[in-house]
Length: 290
Image (cartoon, helix red, strand yellow):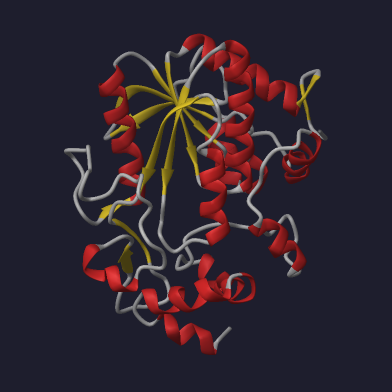
């Protein structure tokens, strides 16, 4: 592990942060995407939780138009020993569609578009037919859902709740500002890697925490190698396709930046590529530009 946190390497520092969280919070969930960062985070959390005889939950928002290997990796993560509840969300959430001015938003898992779905809906998912969230409405924004879920989870369990998020500050100056500067946020016991959540200018008893915020890309892949962690095989295919480890991203494919990577679907999962092109309005136009 390359970076140092005081006199610790980032792996030891992360395990220390996780122990602090498990010692001080009874109800903890981790938000995962199937990407390398959140995957390493939750696997390390599982190791620490097992040592401390603790349990935790996981939130995964399935955006439908995703790589097959991402979903296969999510199924691997579901088998982690210390997970109590795994919230696999397949609700009709509104997402940015930057490939069309006619349809600036698209709604994943929309029943009316079932014939166009990129994948079949998983049997164990939370969907519009079994939704336990009374506040949810079709077409809710992704960011709004994240906040509402946190509030719902806290009300369900009461007391302080901690939500682990696997972001790293070396990927974004805004991320660094969010985590590093304390004067504009409430932290848990002055730990700068925590932030008390606020909804509509009102703080709720949920603390986001960022256990791998000071990791570099090399640290992520070093941990996968040295600790024999599971990983999303799509990264291996990206690397073989000439994508640097510093440029590899997993997102819904129609966003402002993500649309430029639509050709990755064609190169890496050709069968998924055709379905992605047909899923949203005017996306097929991009195949002539890629």
